[in-house]
Length: 348
Image (cartoon, rainbow, N blue to C red; front, side, top):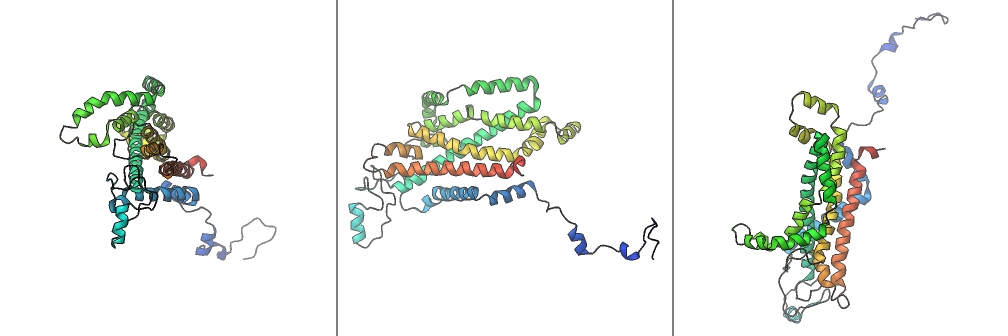
């Protein structure tokens, strides 16, 4: 129906009120697909090529450390007669005779050490020990630090004041000195514990390594506690925490179900960055002779043993040193990638 051009009445054309087609509806959609926090974080992480390469390197090192030794023809503590200080890919005189007789002998990829032990399997086992120590120590730090920091922040007041002053005091304790003191203090009790049924693993691990774990439990969690405290201080004023309190939810459940759950992204990033620090601490202490017990190898103890023969067999030092650097660098780069992917402040 036509209307006067000067009229302010609406032109009620029935065609203008027909339902929109699917194409017209789709053209109005400007929002991107809704994704979860984890899906969005993993998508951002996959775009970070440096972090993904670091993750691949870590996976390869773990395969070499935990899977390959099960199929490797040599053992880390077996001494091969006449195979002392062999160069990479060399054979002993007896092994050459076996090869001439038609027998297949697996080569010593990195040669052998001064005791005639295959060095490649010792490097793999050493990286296994270093990774296990780093992962276990980081787990201890994560548990103690997250619980301690969340309790201090949630209750606040004098509780927070006292707990954080304890953290400040622990920061002043020299860790190396404490490890040395604990090594001597725990030597007699642990030696007596070896004879107790079920504690034979104490002799295998050694007093020094147990002392390292004790020191991690006593000292190294303070950084994690401070990080968790800062996160919980921001989250505890949220509406869902207030609602949980109004419903009568216990403080422990609020901390466990609401506060720590919403800190999980930050906890993952901080934990990933803590692993290389723990590995370096263990390697450094093993290098000084305060690490794993002989004959169990560690990357730090392998580097320490190779120093005396650096002029004649430099590869015995370079291989574990390069592997330590590669592991620590990969974990640090992966931690940076996780931080970029899961930190909401960096999404833009």
